[in-house]
Length: 408
Image 1 (cartoon, rainbow, N blue to C red):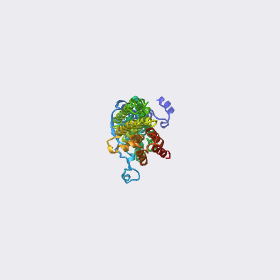
Image 2 (image 1 turned 45 degrees about the vertical axis):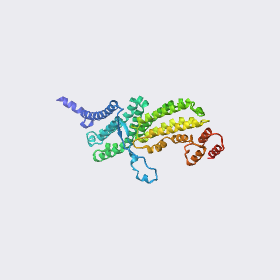
Image 3 (image 1 turned 90 degrees about the horizontal axis):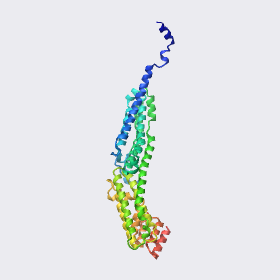
Image 4 (image 1 turned 30 degrees about the vertical axis):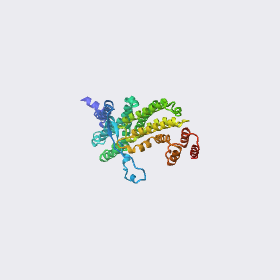
């Protein structure tokens, strides 16, 4: 029994150092928490890699346009409509990622999580944020070529990012309250209280919005380039051809260019109309309609001479452009009677092209009267003067009208 006496004096007090079993228990707790986090991240990866990004689903609400401020109709506007997400299509991937994020936060705000291991809720909260970060990191990289080349996929990514930005702007406040209630009902609530204080997702809103703007903005710029390639080569000599007193090949080229541009816009309309929200769709199409219209307006507005047959041709060309372009703004919520207003609101050059089209079949008396009625308010005085000088021969009426425009 001598060995007992020798060792008993050398052994430290029981409380002076943790026993190996305590260390094992602590490491098991940490391993369990980390395993839960990794399991959630792996679930997010599986969604991002194995779910078809082309599959979409409709989300959001049909939101009516607000009435004109100060009118009686504006009194009946829903004040909460500004917080609603506008109806559009998002990918099933984005929806499932958000569901995973919410489920993780629900688990983190469950009272049992804090009872099992006090560090588990904060680890789950961290995992919920990492799942959203994975979406921003993986989707633009994995589907980069499609996003850059296919208008539909670029629109889907735009909607996904806007959707996640909208949801994350409210997510922090929603779960902050849940964590606060849990902290109040938990005896050892210091960690839960700290989690309720730091719980936020608002910092994720700007990155998602930036990615949304870049994806759709880059695609719109790509479509502008394509429109330019369709139209510009066919209008190279159209300005000089406007002085011809009989139809020439340049007129046919201009008509072909218009048909090509309208066909391109109608194709995009079919792709985007069912994906983008109505408001974003109108802005995007208005941007592209302006791109096409500017190319035609520039060739006509810089003409030194416009013959009477050319004037009639330009009238036909521009009025046809106005009539056909209005159709790309048509949606389920907007009938034929509201198309002109929507087109004028979203396409800045729409009114100018229409005004120039009408100008081409007017006499000087008609132009002077229309000037007083505001028909040419979309045109600058210098532009209208240039058109009058090009389309009409020298006369007292023309001189008087040009002087009138100069004085304005």
